[in-house]
Length: 147
Image (tube, rainbow, N blue to C red):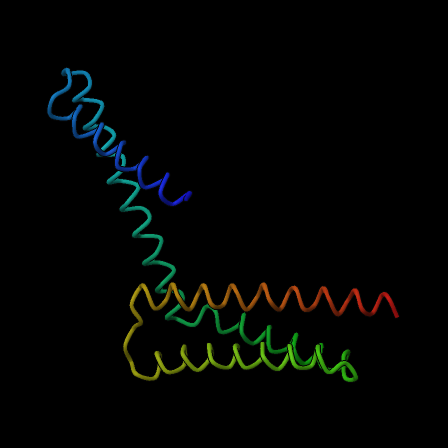
């Protein structure tokens, strides 16, 4: 529902800009041209940001994050040895981490840089893994406090 409202709003804004650009007063035409140029500048800036992050990703910037997550899992295993449910969750998260690490390694070994979409997907996967790990750490800390 919200997506539909946003899409309708965007279509209306584009329509209004086009109308003012071609059929508006000279002042409205000038405003529309200025707005269009600003939108182009924002698009270029976002594109540059994505390209820079992609380069950092390809250079291994996020390998350290995966290594740290692995260390957190080792610490958690020591703390929850007797809780089967938490051990299962740790194992699942470790499997996700290993999958992501393999994807990154495979991309690097093939000597080809990943596309922006692949890099973005891997970054999102890393963020999800980090959030899930944080949630698990909080849960283990709560359990320790209860004991």
